[in-house]
Image 1: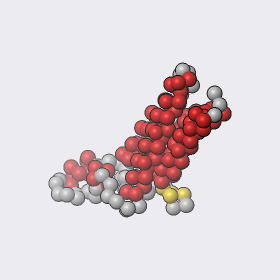
Image 2 (image 1 turned 120 degrees about the vertical axis):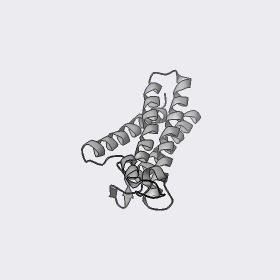
Image 3 (image 1 turned 45 degrees about the vertical axis):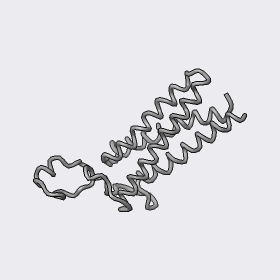
Length: 158
């Protein structure tokens, strides 16, 4: 294995592990509970983490494929983060199931309250330098996924 491949493998494991760890720390330590779209961003990271770990014991030919899948999963989380951040900042409409005000669209307001999600997807719960958690996930995930693909490309050349 080349050093670029090992770095790609480490990134494919570390990035989702760290981002998921940060998500769970923010949830259970700081009380920032996830909305529905926050959960959507976590699922690809779970998949990427498993793929990265499985690549450790896989045959050489399968390792690269597994890491490419992990990179794609990380980037999918980033794309979901872009969508979520856009909803939070009002750049576009979100999904009505997680960002609709109570009573919007008619119907029974009590029923809407009882069936509403606990955390709205269109409200920023926390930000740093004006970037929400979804925005940070979008940045880290997209850049990391691209870096893994680049490292895998370097490995093929070397």
